Image (cartoon, rainbow, N blue to C red; front, side, top):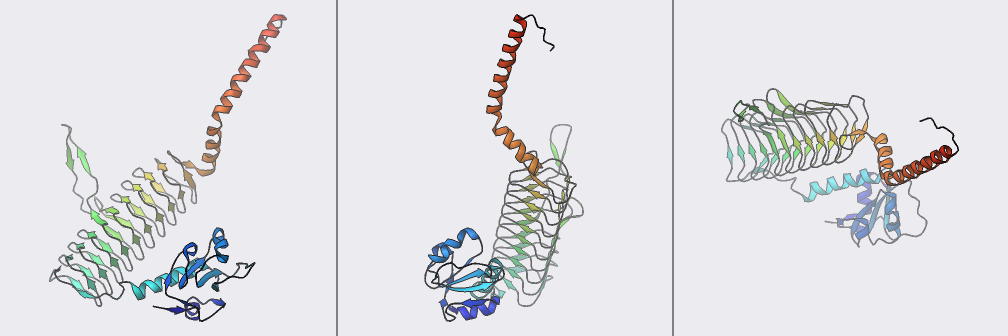
Length: 357
């Protein structure tokens, strides 16, 4: 499938510099650009490739200064990264599986389930009793939807996703392969004989609109009530969300993070990979947590930046790290200072001058 620079510019509302009839048939990274490739420059550190790339068309920012002749046709836009993202979405719609529909066999759909229009349900999928599937939903092969599950319009569940009984997903939710929504929370009551008795987990999971969840992430159902993922949240692969957790709107969490039970995370937080949080704490809106940090207490001030384990304020942590790196030198200086003090004390003592300590 080919596109001209003129067609691309029309989609992203860009201004052409060069040949409007330049053709591309695929997208690629600028450092690997070849004839027929469409790429972009959004980060200044890649600007040197502007003069060496063999890509046919480049999307660039309006403010980019060209200091020597370039081979590719340029399309200038306000934000090259956003414009390129829009093109990738369009490309995915045209070349991906967006057009899939119908119900493949073998699959099982309960007679009591309600299925909307223009739905795709892949082979070996299971849809339980009284489940409700909205319009334009795509459920890929091997998915499991338990009883009374609700899937909102335009949502996508990729192969092997499991959604347990009673869980509700909003509109335009995307869940990648291997994720489990609604597994039991980790609730076990210790007994006098040293054994543990399982606490029944009778709640559910509610995922609001426009949430995307990466592969092999697990979101546990609440002990009572709901584990809630609010609208616009983006979760990476391999994340553990425990029972009764609440994640605020537009928060993003990177891979291998673990959130313990009943923790409440605010809106617009940015949480790095491998962060660990104890249970029953609250994280204020706008909190930023560096990768591999460990939180053992609540964050009450909005827009706080944290790092370390246990995590504390980012700038203070950097100062502490600088001092820590200099400890060997500081130790040597301290030893020399002690030697100098001893020498001075000995000298003063030899002159019968008393020294107060």
